Each structure stands twice: as structure tokens, then as C-alpha cells.
Length: 186
Ligand SMILES: [Zn+2]
Image (cartoon, rainbow, N blue to C red):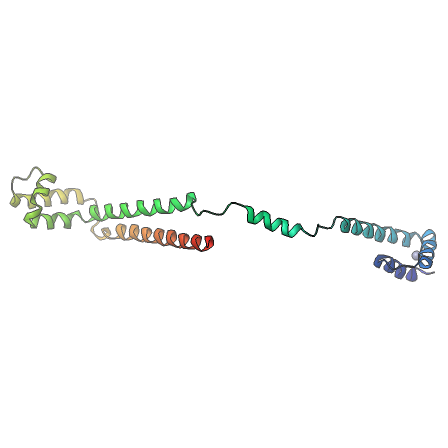
């Protein structure tokens, strides 16, 4: 038998349909041909590895067991740290933006308060240096100018708008996250 015939018998051996007669012929060739012997040893080890693999075939109920283990896991409650943090940062952003609005526009707010006599008691509390409502406005204007000198007039609205946008973005993220988790829980 030549090497080519031996090789085709090796293929049959790999497929597992080698007859006893063919096995004897192949065996005879292998004992005389070192190249085919080496090749056969390689094929044989593959066949043995493969049959070893099929011996540890997964049990039929494995999938159902895995799935039931997954279903047995505690249900997701949706209350996570990040969930709470979204609300926290949203609140901080809102407080900061309100504060920034008051600070940045105190000039206008105090002006309006000084012009409206019903705010006089509050202004007197805020500005005890003023003796009357008349001097109150001038005094307040002076204090505002002194304190407000450091703030660029053009930037007055930039910070509150930026902080408000941040608050809105935080709220949208928080809201979407909440809705997504409610959907998951359903
Ligand atoms: Zn050979």
C-alpha cells in the first residue's frame, strides 16, 4: 500500500468507519512508513481528545438548571447608590443655581426692593446703616456697587444658566434612569 492509500484510510479512521481489514492494512503500512506513522499518531491523538471531550458532554438538564438559578436570584429593587446620588446632585445644582441667581442679580433685586415701600422692613434689616427708605436706596446702591465691582456685568447670566442647565440635565438623567428601572421591574 502506498502513502496516499494509507492517508485515505486514516481519514476513514478519523470518521470512525474503518473496517477490520482496512485497519490491518493501515497498521501494516504504519509499521514500515515513519512519515505515515507520525501522521497517524497525530490523527489518533486528535480522535482520542475528541472522544474524551464528548465523554464529558453536558447533562441534558444543565440549561434548565442554569435558568432556574438565574430566576432564583433576588429581584432587582432599583434602589442603588447612583440612583440616590442623581437626586442629590440634582438638588445641589438647583440650590446652587438659585443662590447664583440671587447673588448675581442682587443689584436688580435690591433695587426693586428699595423702590417698593413694602420691602422696606426687610431692607432695613439687611442694611441697618440706612436711616430712612429714601437713604436706603442710595446706601444699598453703594453697597451693591462695592460688592458687585468684582463681578463682570456681562457674566451675570452665564453662571446661573450653566448651573440651571446642569440641574436640568441631572433631572433628565435621573428621570430616564428611573423610568428604565421601572420598565425592567415590570
Ligand atoms: Zn506512508
